[in-house]
Length: 478
Image: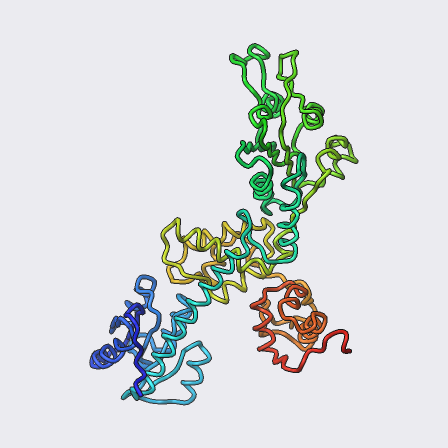
């Protein structure tokens, strides 16, 4: 029975050996498995070319004159963790084979080649490539499934947000959106406008933190010609400009107190009076305000008008920070990667598991906006087919690459020698926490992952690694 696969030659196999006689055999054989074969006799030159060649697999001789095969393996794993490496040698050694596998080699094959065994290894590489591409495609499709008006999330917090937007949008006249910087407050405002009663009307944005204080009143309400020095023409304000549409007041906590009183009247009654005019105009505007400050506390201390706060917060939506919905990070990352690679024309197809772990455990003080920026910088830095852990860490600002313990898995459960959090370091105490979460979720792994604040993919990996194989009792059965 032939091991050859009927596949197109869209995978690259790099062969590094100081005996060119090997090349002809490997090239002739590997082409039948859909590989384009590239050969090199110089290890240093081959490693230098690796980011350009981007091979899917490498076969390297263990006894190279300048750099031995194990060191080449280490270098390849550092440059491109997704590349699969097969070591070749004429002197078989069990100890060397074990060391090679520990370092991440796919396997170890002796010369002269057992072609049946080599065929099995190449088949495994092709299947691994196909499986990885299917998983990446599934992640990308899943990200689309969880998209809503430009926002992405499968976490309970985001599903509740999407439901609130759907309920509020047809009826909202004034609404306050609160949340930390970078959580997507403007996206929520756009969604409310799009799903509202007048989506075809204007959506006007005012960044209250960027307007010079002396010009606030003129910007919002407009002015008459000659109303003040420099007012050479009559100008309508943004409230009039947004008539019959939506006015989004971003960072409204920065609005001067003097302007807040006039804004309250405009919100309450639709009255707009231009600077320098005795007349008022009527406008019909949906006002959505957003802030990263605690406006209730500001109102209590007199830094913000309490009557305006209560008028704006008749309906309020609070956005949770990214650290409280970490299960959304893989889907957000996949969506950002797809958007950035398409725009920058980068040949990246996904994110490695190690890079995903780094993203999952970063503190993200800048929330979704910061995650997107990191993905974009990592895409620009990467030379491989997938974003590696090294790419992601290099793209992070100082301090962001410091991992945090996921919610539900306490810091005390980590061994003292663990430099970074990783499922491999789970102790008995952590195993108990995972089992307790599964028990509380009635055996439902997705629900248990939400309880622990981790991704669904991670819970499956943990259950397998921890060998949590005993039946999980449903709470009512205990």
